[in-house]
Length: 306
Picture 1 (spheres, helix red, strand yellow):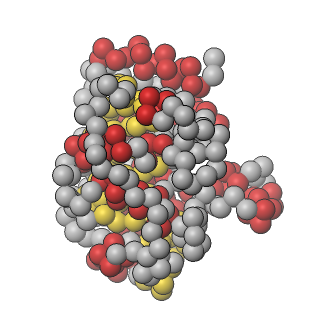
Picture 2: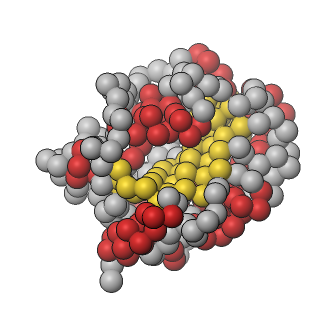
């Protein structure tokens, strides 16, 4: 049985427990807002709080969204220390040194800021080199003994988690996390033993160990919302999520919720096999949950944003 069918069966089997919900157009309240997906520069408040991780060095972010200057851990902690901050952590196929569509600050984080709105704590964009799909990076992967770009990305993800742990591990101010794909594994590894765990952990198309993270959420008192497309074509091949095929939250637990999105209900005529940035269903629906405006009320309500 393939991963998509397992996910569907698991969702249907647990709807009664309210741990899993399924999103349909007839169920959602909907929204008239549009999701902005692209920018050329960063607003000053966003730029001033964002930072990049690269080669064990922290970097400030310029108004053009590129790394500007090396900064210290103390400086990163100071610029991100606002209570209620929301940390964004992206997945693979990004490089904050890229001036175009490969830069998360100009693409994914623009969409997420649009989805989350301004009514809440400050948003902090965190960039790391998660391997653009280029011939040069594929050659680097081969030299490191990895068959694909994804293998190289998982190696870098481990380093990014270690570096992000230095920022969040001893943090005392309250905060939340919004992550996508393998960025969710980075975020979880960064805060798993943190002095102050996040209040809320919003995972979009997460590539991480759901079962272990569910146990952690109950133990540390962290509210988790796991949102994924019903037919995500990427996760069945991922390193961590594929170990959790058929996963559904345990009935009776109150911290970990899962929301499965039937993207066909919203975008029935869009192609799922696409690499076009304008198509929310690109990469087999793996990006859809970061851009569907119908999910705005769900995300803002979970994070306590207006």
